[in-house]
Amino acid sequence: MDWLERAAKLRQWSRSGTRAPHKPLLFLYALGRFQRDADGELRYSAVEDDLRRLLAEYGPPNRTTPAYPFHHLVSDGVWEVRTDRGPGSPGSGVRELREIGAAGRLTPELRAALRREPSLLGRMARVLLDLNFPPSLHGDLCEAVGLELEPTESEQFSAVRGRRDPRMREQVLTAYEYQCAFCGYDGRIGAVPVGLEAAHVRWWAFDGPDDVDNGLCLCALHHKLFDKGVLGIGDSHRILVSQRFVGHSPAAREHVIALAGRPLIGPQPGASPVAAVHRSWHTSQVFHGSPRPAPAA
Image (tube, rainbow, N blue to C red):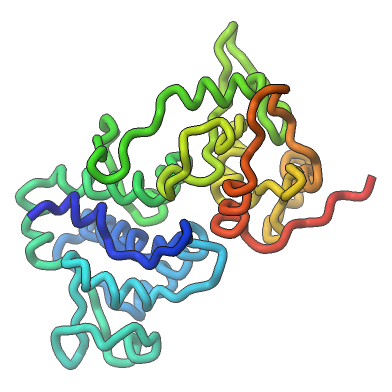
């Protein structure tokens, strides 16, 4: 049984690039718990708040319930649910999962495979991360679910999605003249840029192409905030800042809140700006809440 392939091909609701990372988030959470307690199980009522926070922070902007993946992950052959009445999930109703003591854990076959081959856990986790989330969020997400992964070379998932184009970073940074499109940061050590990254607007995990018109040159801070949905790009290529972002310090006001309504910096003449289709995907699938109005002049 190819457990990596099962991790890569979880059945997820999908339509026109809509994000539905409910199952991958629960699976990652279960792997993290297995790493700490291989024999434990996850009682729904005890982990519901944890799963809800994960969905709020790493899921799509629309509200959803952790009961959905808790029940439906069973169909992928990696997860089982039992209740006080016996084996089997009662469905995806929140009240019933709570009231009859629903508890889930990885299937016996998967638990046995993870015991036989300890490195399998890390490889499965990396498949789930790579195919569902941008690299800028991997470290934070592992910490959130309690996963400790050894630094390894990237796995090859050519059969599932292919490899990223290594040329994209240089092409995007060149197009934006090695400065952050949000704040203009352009730091270097000698001739080498530092703290600048090529961000996918439509995530690579959701069929975002490795093209300049799907990229932005961003500093590390604004890249993370862009991928977390704090920042976005409006129809007129002006910066969106989420109303949900809260920051009272001068630094938060200067580096985030004050960006609202500013035009993007770049790209240079002749380079392709961010395509409308990719901006639209990011706004609907990543950006959280409504945009703040531009600060008064």
